[in-house]
Image 1 (cartoon, rainbow, N blue to C red):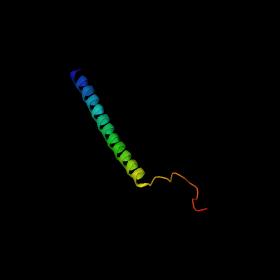
Image 2: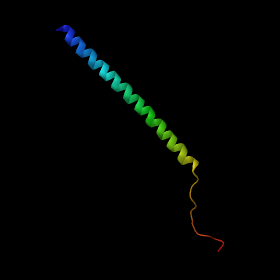
Image 3: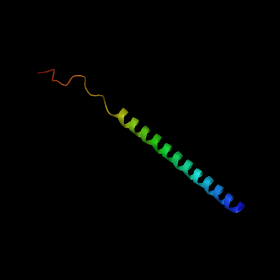
Image 4: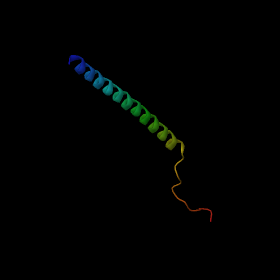
Length: 56
């Protein structure tokens, strides 16, 4: 009976550990994606304030 309880606790700990690792990797991927998006937005010039031809 004790072995069964220990096995269940070990399985729970392994599940929690793998979940924590997955969450950490997803957070890292999210921060990398946000950084890439911010870099892409910063590299695009702002649109002109007026869109009509001033020489006409």
